Image 1 (spheres, chains in turn red, blue):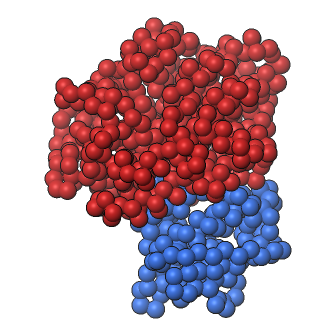
Image 2 (cartoon, helix red, strand yellow; image 1 turned 90 degrees about the vertical axis):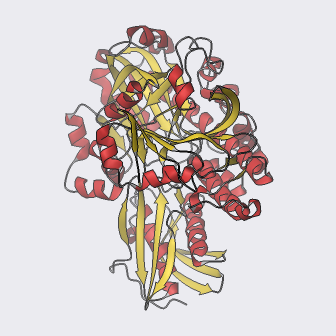
Image 3 (cartoon, helix red, strand yellow; image 1 turned 180 degrees about the horizontal axis):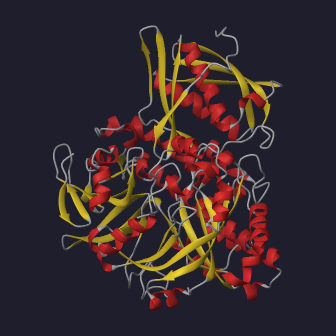
Length: 478
Length: 146
């Protein structure tokens, strides 16, 4: 794969047929060295073949091999002429991250970390084989959840109005069509509202161990040694099934629109087609389920804190900093080559990172830029950043989403054989509660890139600015 | 119709490296066995299959134009049996006809503790999905999204 170095953190795959635009990868020299023979670069080139793509097929520094799209891939397509690709969103529609702050300092909870971890583990169900956090949801209620998103949580006592203001899209993506979800998707979601799931999903309780920008940290309500809660989860079985359903629908409809793409997982149809509209309605519905899911879990986490530490809600001061999704396709206005355009931005393992002053941001955060939440691995740290104006000019308002794996799950399990990973993590100051041993082994810190290197590239490129670093001390795995 | 005796000791499948997710490769002497082994491999990825008892049977049928479609649809259907019905299987018999597959699962209701749940599988992907005959062997490669 031919790569041209544009600067120290940006590389280009030149356009060659059948690519419609060049590919651009944010990475440092070392990362690019590792990527040169990686199939993820071919996927960047494949995405550049999507009809209607505008500007570039982009990849963030946490790029790795995905299905159709690379993980870390961003593609903006013209809202009128372009296509929608479920592979550009992924199986876990609106997989995302939310960060809540507390009034607590680490020293106040240090002696009770085990009780806190136990309470969180008991309160937040994993999903399979357990009743959901909200048992017995009827079909009528599920249809309300997928239509209303976090507003359903507000109406049912799991959210505050402020929580919704601090959630991307207010926790409700417009255009959700409950009729476009299959019966099977509803069945898979019925028992999973308020559940974490397994794989790379987790809840982590952290302390802030580094402030990069005191002014921004203060504006977001963050300070040194403060206890925070980060939740990483998505739309659970309802979203997974929806992606699977529409890969089939869209895969078989492609020929009708004379769309030929190099990979079946990249299946796409015109946005304006009946199949495209049906997928967008279903995707928004699944995205709303995910927001409601994370909101309910945040509520459960708050209850766990109150019970484990025997303190009042006022003393705890549990408040949402922000909730971002990193698997989604959304209609946005962007200026590209001096022309304002309405585009559908596919973010597959990439986070929206709108700069200061953007009207989509809540008033309280607007002057500072959108918080961008980047989870790392459970042994190291996670980051809070904010979007900058450069993101609006160069990446369609997008940034990275996480550390990115360096080791396969199979290899991680082999590496973990004979080791006591929970004890090793405990020695590193991290208390882990997990439902499966394999879940901890596959997610061991060494299986991930150092997220610090990823966020440094984004900062060096001027896309985001680092605000604070979160050091986990209790991690709950599904 | 599969008449192979239960082969829990034989290597049913091999996991191959795929960053982030799990890929499996299956080799079988005939087409029925290939699909049967895929069904058992899925159960083995979800739970410790040796701990599952054969108390009940479930039938699953799928139709498809190609063997790859049949493989995807069969495994997606089985994943649904696990997630929605919370049923796990220790063994299965599979009958393949042109364009359709019927699988009979032998197992019981899922118990996360007793069956040693190994973690969720989000989906059966189409990514590099292959089902083909090579000489006298039948081979399949499947990647699951974890």
